[in-house]
Image (cartoon, rainbow, N blue to C red):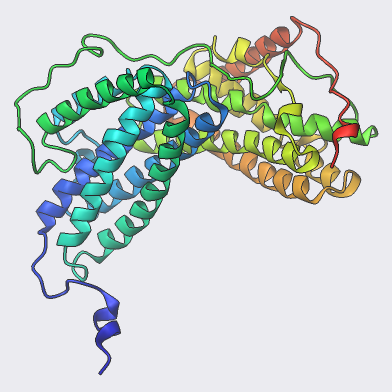
Length: 423
């Protein structure tokens, strides 16, 4: 008899493994750390100048938010109340992760992720999988195997970024100092899994003592792309110019992703579903910026030929979280559902007039994403805002007027003539 598929191929089926209580305890700590690492990466995309790292952080914050979300759901299946599953499992972990929010620059942020939190998470996941009964605890095992695969890939990518960013002895020393401080605090908190370390009763913060972290109100950018205030709009009958403009518009959605960090972090006391939704919205906007980057490289062979517009920085980062999200969800994105012009028209332009297969695919998914964003905004604003819905519409309209006034502060630039660069 071939026993390889006995017990449905599951492992450790005859070992007692971990109890439900112990599974829940470890999963609770993992869920909380994943949640806080989501916030850590999300808020730092604003002050991370490196384009490629900024995009990576946006992806990883979303994936870590998904990990937290799935683990929180699993906790309720392990006899943990919903309210408890959404509370910090250990105040020392909370203090540690509050301190990590004050990582200074890309060097310290990467040190925190590459040297402390990501390896720590992987170690606890692997330990859990090596100890639990794979038959009894199948749902957690299946979930964690997926999480481990994503965390391993994420760590490899962050390590590559670390090698590029931490490129001097001085930066390496800075990274090691910060990683050492966070690691000391983590050990005092019993580690991510809570099953080793000094077990100190309290952890004393330094940078976060008596201070609430706030998202920076101006994004930092490297010189990957030339920067312009805005782009001159052209009609669809000027097909080559309109096509290039559409690529540049997608590229500029990076600013929306950055601004959503304000909503994600500074809006407090919302259900977890709110933060999971905004995390997804942030990553989608960064993906759309990457659509523009991929199309530029595909068409012209060099991403740096395409400009990114700056005018959105000047109004998005001056708005309150509610004003910002009402303007985006009710003002900008809901308007894009109208046809014509709207997202459907952009897709049809790429398919029927520009006849560009890659941009047709990208605009097709951009359209689908924007439909979802309108649904997210309607749901979250309804639950978030306790006032009259007409007040939300007024806020959105005021935000759109602010946007229009800001846009007119400086003249737009014509798109560069890229015909000679086309591959």
